[in-house]
Length: 375
Image (cartoon, rainbow, N blue to C red):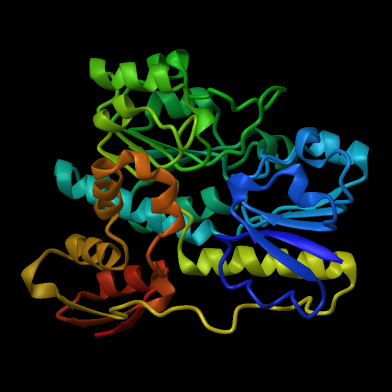
């Protein structure tokens, strides 16, 4: 038995070697030649699994260490008898941390209190649900749009897209990529979408680049129709649009879900899935040790800033989104290298707040976000 594994998937080396031959290959370089004697694949989004790659190979199972699976031709796999799985929710908390950093950074830079804003969250799955909770903790009014869930669960708690475009100051996209059908999301954010948006203060995309029409978003930024834009996912990655990056408030190289916690979750889900598929044994495996933050203790002094800034400071101490923006702007051609060599980032739960004169209000908010707090 043999497995081929994307060489950027962390924590996995040595785990499956007791059960199979394992070859580690850069994800964008995995080819049919590599797969002529391979039974299982563990990949990321950079490997397009379709007829061109898979036909004529013995591959029986594909696991992707990602939430999204639009890089897998599921229709072909079904016809070919190839089983596949993704890692739903693996990096949801990581994307949530990214959004929290994005919102707090924007609030400070633009001097706009979040409590005065309404956010429309389009797509309320594992990620969108967490973002909605965090937005409420930060004081935003929250509108939720998710047509598939509304059809299945009923309309209570959800609003139509038109209501979000009418009332939201901020829109954050958290949808899967569907090229067609009733729930088509390809170029969801197009000219018509933006023209109908009444108060476009901040547009955020952390799901898939193709859910936004790059030309439309860029033009509306140039025209001032959209005031600010924070983009992590781009069309045509890694060949991103330099003009859009130039106009964004924040641009990052598709790393919103790249916390070490999220990566560990994705790897674990893949190892467990391939173990079940081939009856290998380690069906409850999880990485034994995840790198600790460089500075796990955050010191905050509540008497030197208002309590809203205390919360923002804590968020930024775990992840300052502007650093990833600066790295991409300085070397936009290094998009893939910035992803592949991404530094250690841990989620809120890995940090302890040690504060002085922090209000009970701020302390409770920090606990709700996932921090440990010692005041």
